Image (cartoon, rainbow over all chains, first blue to last red; front, side, top):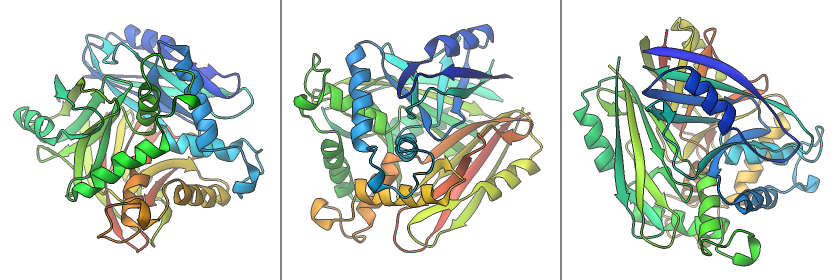
Length: 139
Length: 139
Length: 139
C-alpha cells in the first residue's frame, strides 16, 4: 500500500464551473496505483468541488444559474459584506456543494461514470487561483 | 492492510429514496475487515447518495417532497431540456446531495448512528438501474 | 500504514455552528501520522458537518440564518412532525450539508486552507450531545 500527494492550482475566470478532469486524471495516471482511493480537497471557502454531467454544456449553464438563484447576491440578506457582495453567497454555495471528494480507483482510474465530470466551482466574481490537494492511496 | 471492491446495481422505480443498507452491509460483512474505511460511489449525475433517518417513513416522504420544491421540474427555468423535463432538476438535486460517501468501519461495521440509513436517491421519473461502487480498505 | 480511530462528543447549545477544530486537530497530532487521510463521521441525522470560514463571525451568523430560510421550520410543509417542529427541517439541513468529511493529511496536519474551519452544525433547537467518529489512516 502506498500513498502519493500533490497540489494542483486551478486558475478561474470568475464565477463558473471549471473542468479539472484533465490535471487530476493525468496526475493519477502517473502514480501507477491500480486499486485505491483518490481524495480531492479544495482549500477555500468560496470555491468548491462538483461532479456533474460533462456532455451537454447547457447543464453547466443551468447549474450556474441555479446557484445564483438559490443563494442570491443580495446584500440586504447578509450581515457579512466586507469582502464584497459576492462573498457571502460564495460561502453559502460552498456549503451546499463539497470541499472534498473521495473516489475509488479501479484499473488505475477513478470509477467515474461515463457522464461524470470533475469540476471546480468558482463562486467569486473575480478570477482566482485555487488550490486543490490530490491524495492517492492504494496499490 | 487490504482492499476490496465491488459494484452493486440498484433498481429504482422512478423518483425516490431506495434503502441500500442491506446490500452494502452484507458485502462489507463478507470482507472480514475489522477497522477501515468504506467508500460508496454513485456513477450517475441524476441519482445520488443520502444518509437519512430510517425510522419514520414520513421523513422520506418529506425529503422527496422537499427536493421537488427546491429544484422544481419547470422547463421554463432551464436551458437543458433535451433529456426530458425531469433531467435538469435531477442534476441539481444530485449537486445538492452527494455522489460519494466515506464512512469509517469499526468492529467490521460502518460506524453509522442508530437512525442513519443509507439511501440511493433516484432523481429521474422513470425506473433506472444504478451502479454504486463499494470500496473497502482496512485490516 | 497504520490506522487510528476515536469518538469525540460535542455538546451543543441548540441550533448553530460549533467549531470542532481543536478536539479534532489535537487528536490527530497525538497519532503521529505524517501523510494520510482523516475522516470525520457525524452519527446523527439532525446534525451535520460543515467546512467554513473561521475569520469573520458574521459568516457564521449568515450561514445559520440562511439554513433557517432554505429549510424553514413550518409544520404546514411537512408530514413528519412527531419529534417537534424543528426535527424535519433538521433532517433537510443535514441532507443539504454533510455527514462525513475526508481530508488528506500532510506533515501531520489536515490540508485545510488558512480560512477553513471545521464545524459541527447542530440543527435541533435543544442542546444535544453529538458523536463524531474520527478515523486516521496513513504513515
